[in-house]
Length: 348
Ligand code: SAM
Ligand code: SF4
Ligand code: FES
Image (cartoon, rainbow, N blue to C red; front, side, top):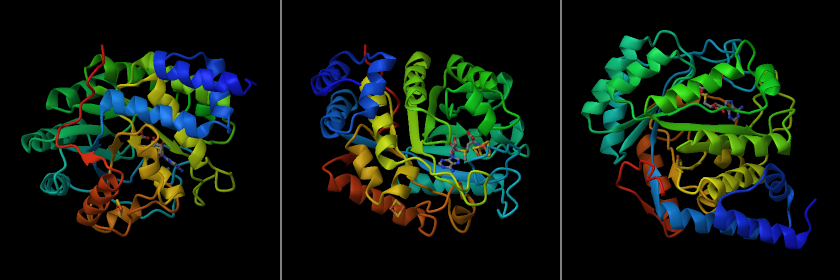
């Protein structure tokens, strides 16, 4: 374990060079004494590279039907307690139009892996939303390269697929029937096809080590990801991981802050799961390296049915209310909601 002086030197090294070894990342993630300095460094790097503006992305959760069975997720196919829904094309486009009217410049189309949304349907949805002048992030799981290509050609700008963990063995244990190598293949295809690549990890999944979190951060760097979402794992009582402990807010924000230090110019959301653990979670995350928030713009009762984990915020609120709420929080810390699309501006 590094001593006190080493920790401060490491924080400085990360802030100036944006390069650390795995061993150095582990030392910083395990330190508790200089957390405030560490977070302050991430906040400075955030300000220097991506500025004070916060980009909002409106999240449309359009289907909670999923063919996969990830042990941690409330939407897993074996969870019989979920009321399943799937929005039709017109409703999805209507929600996107409403998001635009609330001032969003990007919508995120997210769902379980629902085969009913075939390529033609998704292409129609993407094209129609594009006509509204919105940027589009798609987050619908693993697909063959040709499918990603069709989404891209239809106008999708970004794709979000978390690696969840770079520990292959752990990944394949927690995501039964799925292959870690295929997930990496998906991420490579997404990058090659010219999407902005979003990935990320869960913090605190059972069996995960600090070393493996350090590997996750180095993996984000190696992939040259454009967006990284880090969130605590929150145990869901209707899943096989019901009795597990879950991730903490502090460790999740540490992994996020480390990501900002090592990938200084990317977009990093203050995640919903962070605020589900801590009522000030998103504001604190915005002060520890984040520059994006993804408020829910799904209308009506569907919000309560997309329940990945208990305590998810905003499930009883309206998109209009959330828009005002998050704007107030952002302005409350002296930051500003961006009016731009918020693509990554790569730093030379
Ligand atoms: N099905 C797509 C996928 O898996 O990429 C997109 C939807 S999935 C619900 C979005 C993210 O939710 C996953 O990448 C996972 O990290 C997160 N998630 C699922 N269960 C969770 C839990 N119990 N706690 C925190 N995050 C969770
Ligand atoms: Fe399905 Fe995604 Fe949940 Fe896995 S994390 S069960 S793929 S919705
Ligand atoms: Fe939904 Fe605050 S963002 S209630």
